[in-house]
Image (cartoon, rainbow, N blue to C red):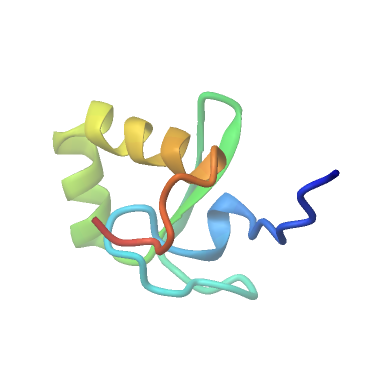
Length: 72
């Protein structure tokens, strides 16, 4: 039996705050351990840079489907 769950790309939402940045929106996109992520604004970029390990862990959980939404 296969799990046909739809997985959204990691760069569809800001990794820090969860805001939608689909269709090219947002402040920037970064390559984090081989995965493109999006950040919606300069404040989220600053927050990401201050605690990269936390957000790398969040990205891993999102990729595994262990977070139901895009916010902590």
